[in-house]
Length: 366
Image (cartoon, rainbow, N blue to C red; front, side, top):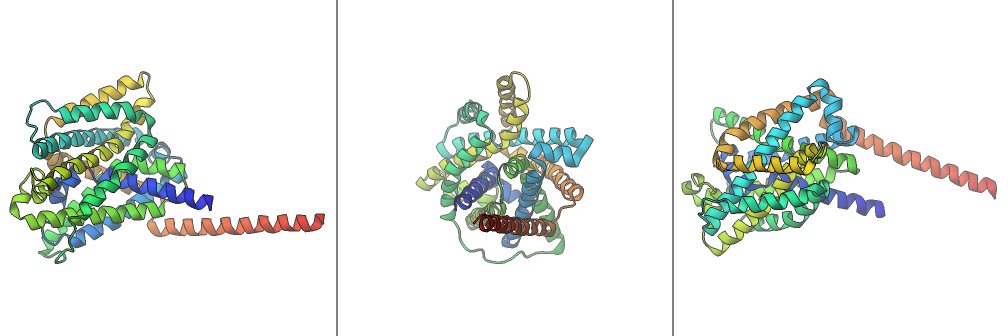
């Protein structure tokens, strides 16, 4: 029973960390979703994205369990190319942190009317991140477990069943599929250090990965349905979901607070690989401060340019990373389930055999 509760707690922490990593500033604002999903008929792409999320999460989790964490995955699967992929990931994490800082500035400006040229919200978040990020995965788990339920509760209030499935010409569908794949690969790539290290620290994980993928899909449907109901004005807004909720209203003020919660969850998850890299160097605190300063300066360019130009490039890098992981490890979803199933069966058989031997020895002693 104790083992069951331990595995359930691990799955809950993993689920919250994965949801918090994906559901950040760009997601909650609607800027990412409008960029990578069709404005009409988004239900089928969102369901497909949830399935892809589960496949990517489960692959990375099992690789982390097998190789002893993210560093072990890089060393085992990428060999001499490991430093290159590490550099790409750290650069992408820095860009994502910059996107979260820019999202904080945009939320403070559009939600609370804070129009000062000094980005106070991002600066305060950088200070909090510097103070608490030194706890590593414990900080990631704690922040996400505290804030992710609040985010999901608010988003669920705006959920409405989608109307029609994906419609349009085949060329439009193919373009939507490419954008969808780039978006999922980008988020899975950025979450890879958290997922792999979580796999190295606990057993199971399938339930946490599945729950996270389902909740991410549900949140995407809720945000996109609200944006679609708001019309063309929401699509051209810097924060489409805030436009749909209603800026400078009671619901809009609550949205801004929830959006900031989502920004903080993704910010801690995105900074985790940068923190791990800084901890390996002398004067780690100074390196962490320098990385935060770089992300802060990058954020001054705004959220929209990052979503429009940088995110697709990170998605391409994520696709290459996941393709190499799947090919070099010779792991696919069926083989992963097959391996897990037979490993658990062998463990049960081995446990019964030991129990029978113990009973035999006890009978012999009598």
